[in-house]
Length: 149
Image (cartoon, rainbow, N blue to C red; front, side):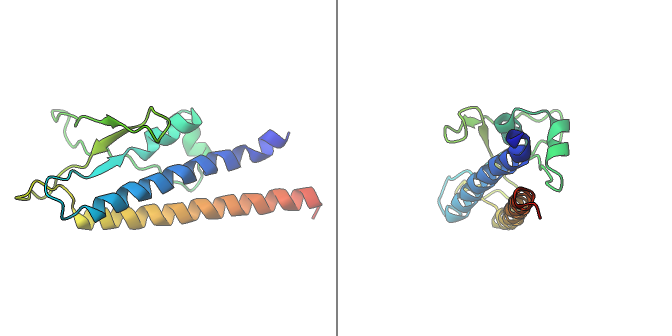
């Protein structure tokens, strides 16, 4: 019975960890905006959360009420080739990190687009904060139920 009460907390806790990891990656991209040859990195949050929770897409949309799971594959045409991904060992070993799509070619080979990185950083921050609020709200609900209020 207690497992059913805390199952929502588990989902949001895993989402929070992934949000924090994505925030770290986006901050790393921004920090290396002036590094010659640096390729921006990111991972597909939806796939990573699916692997962490081992649920299907439809179950994710039910469980993550209010959470929008953004896909960041960056492929706009079926004839485009996917960029090679590198396995990220910090994210359960199965989640692949990909390279960001270069929107503005630069002379030094750096693919960090600061406008896109800032927008992704702010978007991820808001989603991180909302996930924290979900966890806080569910914790208060469980505490109220235990205390009989």
